[in-house]
Length: 303
Image 1 (cartoon, rainbow, N blue to C red):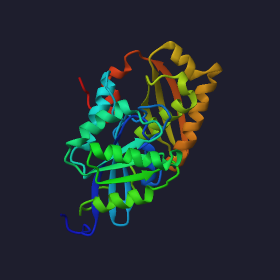
Image 2: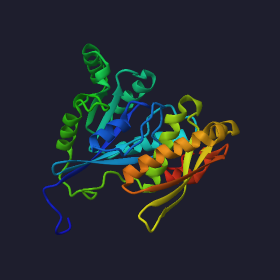
Image 3: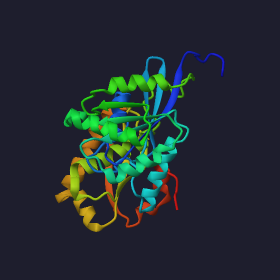
Image 4: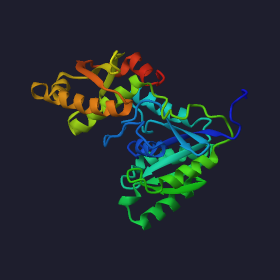
């Protein structure tokens, strides 16, 4: 250990796993205390391998917010699933998040089977308890702990914050003695360029709902700080077909302006300085095969 480093600190890694749309990103944001991961009602929103950094007294909890684990078909899907399992390797604890309202058993049961034999300490977070009767929660806890020997079960609502302080305190108690890996004021390992793309992509999903399929990406083109303290961000929204481009643009460009304005406001709030955001749409049928997309969102190129 280097001299001058505090010796009474704890720091460790928690891999946050779950079926798509279980509320992992919302829970990571709640544990960190501010937004570090994008959320959406659309499944498989999380693509990038992002780390959220939560503090509890003298403990730093590094949360690997992984993509949802599902049956991969395309290269991007395979890369996302590989990243999720990679995030669990050598973790000090695995936190499985389950949406008790939309159980998605077809994806959850194989995940439970895969977790059974893993050596890491395993915790279960039953999420959205504010929308479920207590009897059902107890039944699910009994059912899942019969399959996987979870050390602890937590009943939480990532949205309302119910049960989150207790979960955070327990996670902190599991972290080993270690100097902190990140500065005290850092809440994520995501670069501002990546975070900016993720926030625009979140608005894309929120404003277009079912109109735009999962096949869309946001690429960074430039990120230029200006002398007045603001930043100029140029991004490319990539879709696979001309029809999708028309949806993103909207009538006379109204939709892309609305997406850009909402993303710009949120980015200015998150980054703490004014933002000038410029978006344009590109049709690229096989964007999910482009290596630069993977490099930008920290996924490995998976054959």
